[in-house]
Image (cartoon, rainbow, N blue to C red):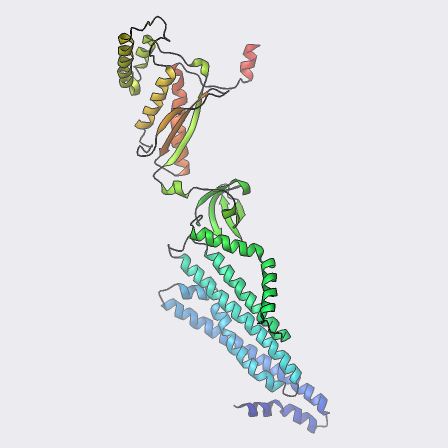
Length: 420
């Protein structure tokens, strides 16, 4: 059916009403109203039927393919949006026929149809982007990348172009001139300042591999301590260990300092670094009787025997007067305890001996002398790590009295009562 035939049928009601004695103005008006109702009902029915057909056909096609990309297209309503194209094209072509007697209405409705077309193509583009993001997230290569940020940037660009296009359709004002583009750019920079900063930050985060989805980070400034679950254009979402969520501005990841535990998780061990505070007044030289008593501790018996031989040899060679223990070389209960702690760590199968291991003094404080344990557990799981660390310090705290040492502790209520 050609255009002339359609125009003939569209005017049948008008001709009939005029032949029945109605004025031409009212006949044209009623003819247009009836034609609009018939046209829009027909286009609506066609849209429903065509949409159902396209969606079912696309689902059947996606079920037969091995790739999951078309499955994500279905979930993102891509077939639904595509199905609107044919009814829109038909409506676009029949508007000039229906409103042939009213050029103003024809132009107005065509502008509306064009605006709807722009919005429809933006939604189709968004469906493709979302499906692409979901598809790429299945790959190990892209699983921990901030794909959502890139999708959001492209959507902002698409909406920007679409808005400019719609403005041009509505006003007829060209946005191509350099001056207009410059002014529009200034407005966009002002409105989307945070978005642009987030976009730049997300690129730096991705390129420099600062943060990945699944990383454990600690960001004290924002109270975040947990795993990164999402990296968007504007924010990074962190699920804390108390199951609360913290959102961090993406730009803060490059502007502020935070702690990323990925290096520990990928290494061969998790660091244990904690100190025991020894009461300074309990530190003393060891007598021969003390050394003989400590030789009953199996871990340090070979060390004590070997070490004492060196001490005695030095003292005899230099004719040291041993009536006072301070003269010459001597062993101390704290020094022997340090060696015991070192031997205990080396005997512990949960400690990685290939990594750094040390027991050391720290500077004396008003709370005693810190004896720091520095080593790495093989198991990096938080729960198991805490158990390993607790077992080590439980043992060392219980072992301290065997060396005639005391743990520093501030006076409690019972201590004050005893003094009274």
